[in-house]
Amino acid sequence: MVNFLLLALAFGLALANDYAELQGKWDTIAIAADNDAKIKEEGPLRVYVRELSCNEDCNEMGITFYVNANNQCSKTKVIGYKQADGTYRTQFEGDNKFQPVYITPENIIFTSKNVDRAGQETNLLFVVGKSQHLSPEQHEKVVEFAHENNIPEENIHNVLATGKLNEYYCNN
Image 1 (cartoon, rainbow, N blue to C red):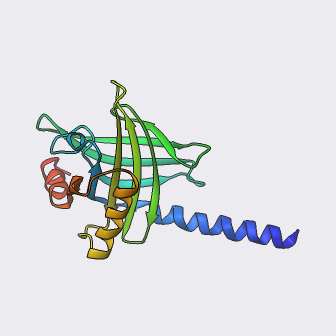
Image 2: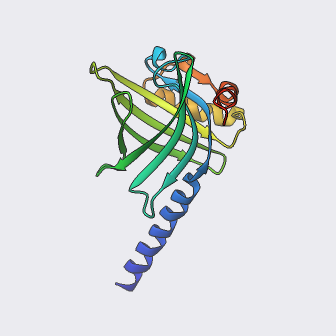
């Protein structure tokens, strides 16, 4: 019984470390989607992430980001609520389920599924990082996740530069 409790404690501490890695300032590095129109310049799902936060056990994940539509920049914060299957669910441009699938100190890759108000499903990848471009190895990891989520490789967009520009124009 003691061994089981120690194992549970160790597992809990490992998860706590993962949650700690999620929190803080981040920038959108790349976005990919099977419906490319959703993530093009001024597309409704082209978001410029700036910060991630979690409550103590990360049952709620806050995401602060900017969107740029009709030449109007707006800061938005959504809260994702953890579901039984480990994904997070929130409302933004429809219903969204997302989860971090790859976490390093430099980057986090999120998979996401958006169902818009018309019922159209879009599979997405969001890559956030610490303001650095992806290395060739990191890019290959993104390509791998894109293939797993039926997203064509040509739909992977490097948005780091426009993310910085967007923040400048938002006076932030």
